[in-house]
Image (cartoon, rainbow, N blue to C red; front, side, top):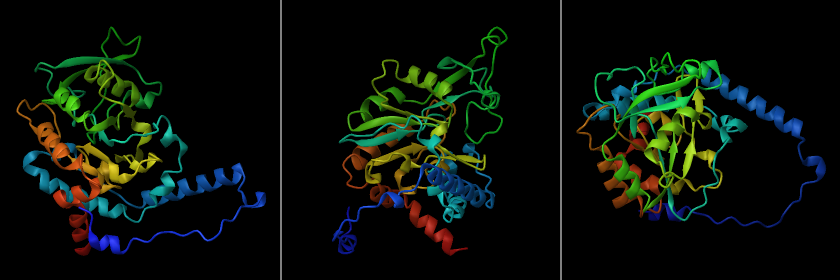
Amino acid sequence: MASNIKKLFQKSLKIDSIYKESENDIPSSNEISNSRQSHLEEFKRQSSSICIFPLNIRENYSGNYGRYIEKTLTHISELQNIKFEYALEDPTLYDGVPNLSSNKKILLLDLDETLIHADFDEKYVNEKYDTIIKFKACSEEKERNDIHVDNENDSTCSVSGEEEEEMIHSVGIFVRNGVHEFLEEVNKYFDVGIFTASVKEYADAVISFLDPENKLIKYKLYRNNCINFNDSFMIKDLRIFKNVDLRKIILIDNSMYSFALQINNGILINSFFNDKNDTELNNALEYLISYIASAEDVREVNEEFFNFNQILNDLKKCK
């Protein structure tokens, strides 16, 4: 699907000479640290100047899919002038980021409301869970009350009286229809990872249930690998993978804010809570195998199908 027009504008780079920096030109570690801190402060300043109230993930459902996209892209258009490359200078973002070296394309999957739903707020307490997972408490008090991030501010972890002393959390889980078959099949075409905005302790417990033999999920990324935008939503900037060509990486998520910075690397899936008739993973699987697996550039294929960039540009023109 490569465009002939684009090929006309491709230029080869010729290096006529190589200049070796003198030792005096190499910045000291203190200068690098100060520059990084200055950039991070600038990113925070720019971010704080924009007030975005993200749509609740419950707004992303089958009958409201198009409206969710339009309203979310309206918000995302406001992020275009922020220097997110400054945020990427935060070294904590890279903690645990794997070195993705593979001939296969990389498929990253969100966890909550994409593969499973954790009933932290006990809305479905009278229904039968697929499983109940238990996991150790976080070390920080703030995270103890903020295990799970999905733009629903009332989501908290529950602790039974018997377990309070050991600080073990438990939560009922609903698994999206076809998850195990989906994971088995996509592994034939992709290297598969989880990229979640939830904390490691909780996410690892869920992943261990989904992949008990540790064969289907190769990579795991967590909240610390996300950019926290004004405590409003988490952004999963794919540029944290230093050696990965963005033509070869795809993220499936129920929140469009997650892939706001690489809009054509994302596949938006409807939010899952507890729908026994849900077929979203089957639809995603067909698309991945039929179009993405053989694509030279996943971004071009995604744009042709979903037109996210076109919608984004149209919204800018209307301002």
